[in-house]
Amino acid sequence: MKRAKLFSVLPTMLTLSNAACGFGAITFAAKVGPENAGGSELFIAAILVFLAMVFDMLDGSAARWANQTSDFGAQLDSLCDGISFGVAPAFLMLQYNHLTSDVALPFQYHPRLLWVIAVLFVVCALLRLARFNVETEEDDSHDSFSGLPSPAAAGVVASFPIALRGLRELAADNEATAQQLAIWLIPAIKVALPMITLAAACLMVSRVRYSHVFNQLFKGRRSRQHVIQLVFTGAVIFVVREMAVPLIFCYFAFASPLRAAWERLEVVLRRGGKSRQV
Image 1 (tube, rainbow, N blue to C red):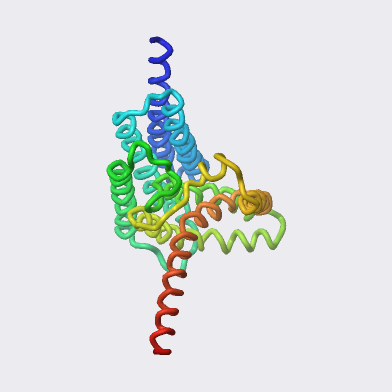
Image 2: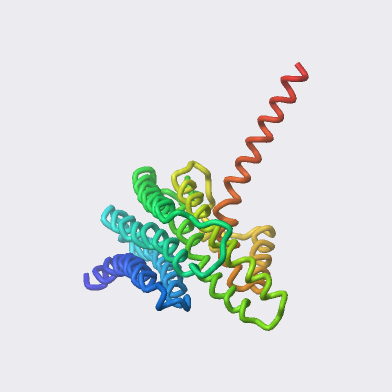
């Protein structure tokens, strides 16, 4: 009985660790201001979001391994995900704007617009989590998802503070090419991040199909294509280092909808060609 109770507590503790990381991310991001302009606080906050993703992956596996899956665990998981993958990334996006306030831009976002985008991200994350709970059956294989998963959407937003740390190191580099690249990328990311956050929010409540990367990579036999993708991903990480994180997450988030839009366009063009022939 003690062993069974220990197993039932383990998934719950992993889920609550997810929420603790989300709260910690908000706490560190709140320290960003004129007196803390080094960027380490936002970097730590982003790392905590990714750590919350690790706990989110482990709690479900631990519950299935211990044969302790329950409705309570599913609801608790969504509540914790709402903090770590809804509120925390939205707050990071707002604080990123404060952290890079010294960056010269051709235009500035109105603070109210940034706030609205952050609220929409939180709302869409909560809707995504609630829909997942309602639509997912207990024996679901989780080979794919309908809509961008909230951890992936959070990873898209949280990846940019990590990239910013690497870009600022490049800006301080003695090499002129590296400096020019960093000087161009830092303001470009500041302009793009709110729109990327808004796009990720919309994709969470969409019906675009996304594959379950963890299950495809680490379960069952792997095809040659999977091996090539892993090698290519490793090469990208080695070459661009911190910038690989937003590249990988943005590719996962936006490749599927772009592919679906291209396939639909091909169908429309094919139908149009047939109608002209008739």
